Length: 177
Ligand SMILES: Cc1cc2nc3c(=O)[nH]c(=O)nc-3n(C[C@H](O)[C@H](O)[C@H](O)COP(=O)(O)O)c2cc1C
Image (cartoon, rainbow, N blue to C red):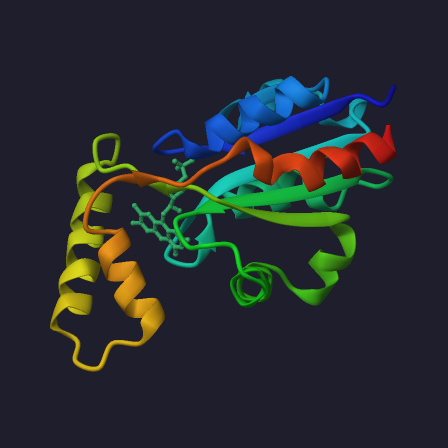
């Protein structure tokens, strides 16, 4: 069996929850991104990176790219978690905004899992950003359907994450090992 390393970055716990669900389905070592320096990354054949979305960006991605993306002969899987529902348009935009074409060639698979928003675990700065964004949407006239939905969704904590969402990723990993 090929060894798998799952690196995750989490602020409010959603990505950690997904990392735990994945580690229950496939045998892998799971570490937070902050511990990457303590790990012998080269001893793994499959490396998974997961993190939450933050204003359109996948958290911690630059550190992951610097340490892992150019390693030869590795299968690389990236997943992002975010409050936005998982539709093709959203996934395409996340990939386009976070990776160059060349980087995408080095990534075997990208997945996006819907999560939610957790105000109780959010830091003060993030809370302020969310409040400001919510206010902007409140004041905006002629909101699109997506904007209306986002405004309602982020008005309070919610959790739409589901273990079901990881199934395609687990199936793909099982093909690799
Ligand atoms: C300041 C801020 C910005 C966010 N931006 C986005 C975003 O652009 N797209 C999205 O889908 N979710 C966004 N979210 C929701 C988070 O991505 C979501 O809660 C994610 O699962 C957090 O992962 P974590 O709990 O592992 O840190 C944002 C949340 C915060 C607090």
